[in-house]
Image (cartoon, rainbow, N blue to C red; front, side, top):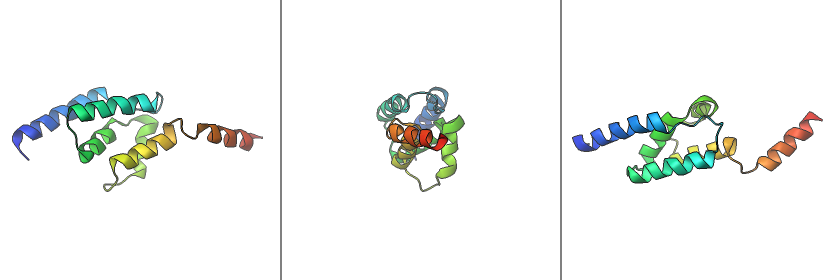
Length: 102
C-alpha cells in the first residue's frame, strides 16, 4: 500500500472513530445514510466499510460483532443491523412479543 493511501486510511479511521458511532438507540437508517455518505466521499471499498462499521458499533449494537467473523461482509453486517435495530418487521415482532406476554 502506498504511504499516501495508508495515511489517508489512518486519518479516515480516526475521523470515523470520533464521529460515526452507533449504539442501537437512535435511528439506524439515519446512521447508515450518514455512514454511506462518508464512505462515498472517502472512497472506501467494501473492506474499508466493513472495518469502519465494525469500529463504529458500541453498546447493544456492538454485540453484533459476536455474530460476525473475519469473512463477514459489509452488506451482511448491515442486514444484521437492520434485523436487530431497523424498523422492518417491527410490527410482526411486537405482535409476537405481545402474544407471548399473555
